[in-house]
Length: 580
Image 1 (cartoon, helix red, strand yellow):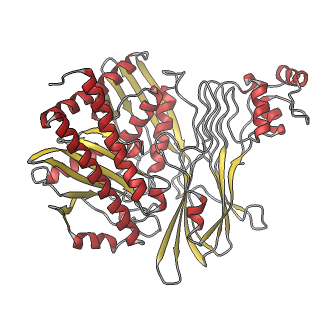
Image 2: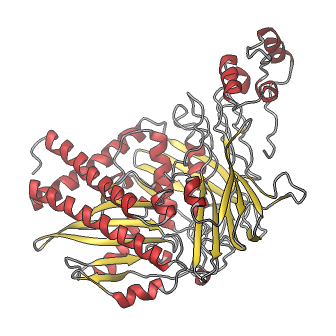
């Protein structure tokens, strides 16, 4: 029995701290840049029934998928888990999300008592398939994407099945990199197990179970209380991904959010059927993105665990882009999560007008570069480029930051260049790319790369070219993303948003994220804030006049007379945004 509120609060923070310790372990021990630098991984603790009780401050769209992965593991091994076991999984049809995301699950025992499970999810740099990085948008079958791992036992009683591990390693481009990141996952699981056992020693096995149950109830209660503040009703919204990378599009995402005394229902009926390319997601991934969107809109400190998930019900069409049917390719499904989040937030904007931001960049641009060096060894580089948040109801959007669902970091320049295969020629923000509004959207981020290797396979995943980040409450749209070969040169060519290329030495590529949408009418923005943007290089003088009807003089001051004349005599509609 729980003794008091102090005990519960100490436990709540302690178990979250254990999950964060797992994440720190991965950051400190991972080998690949996409994990150690861009932080594309997650960690969590589950109870003995496989329910999430705590998760690290990592990737939200991973974490909500853990219940499905745990259900798959327990369905196959639930009666036969032992101390020292480790289980792997990445098959999207059997509890996974896409093949690069490998789950590692370790049961945690105190004597003969199963306390729970330590779970890690890492986006490995490569798991095989026809393109370096294993996330080619153009893949049309999961059999082209890499090694598939059903729920499997990697280690039994502390002994690793080397035959099984070697089979996996033989199918990837950088086996030692995968081995290193997998060992990082196991180290994190070890840290999580030690922390969970320490909590059991402090509270007792039964006390740990009771506190975990109370923690789930606590999250459910907080969420239901927050949802009760909203006006009951049904709210709809539609957004799009530009295309599927194979010439078909646009791809619609529709949601009908119903708030009632029973909780929250998200009905995605009317969304796109399954597509031919690798953009298809799993139902677990769709739910996970939805959880992230709602938690972000509520802006509350509600522990995200299985209790948080209880008030939700879903209608997710089968054989749709939100729940692809095997053998659908899934490698590029990350874009689906970001568009789900934008769509759900669009529906919730009228419900929580003071909390929901305008749309951001629509998900990080990712550029996977595959090179075969002079010795015949494969090298995989990942350039993750996060752009901008949309403007918030009470302040500007944030520049150069991960979207809500990802919690990633931009790949450092040094990480890209130390291989010697690429050079970064430019990296920064572009002015006049944030959506105009009373509060301005975040700026687009750009990166200029030059290929130094004799030949490189390049896979680009970007979006928000045709369907721009939306503004809210009268705010303007953001600017579109763009990919350009030989920017500013005689062979300059604008690429599609999701191309696969083979580039040779000296080829130059620029990729630019979308700029975030604005919030509120642009011509109500305080001229002093526009002046600050001009002085900071975020808005040009021409942009100040065009987008905000504010005149900034050569002496770096606002010409209030000219500004007032512009704002009262001309059209007050925001201009259409064009490619930066």
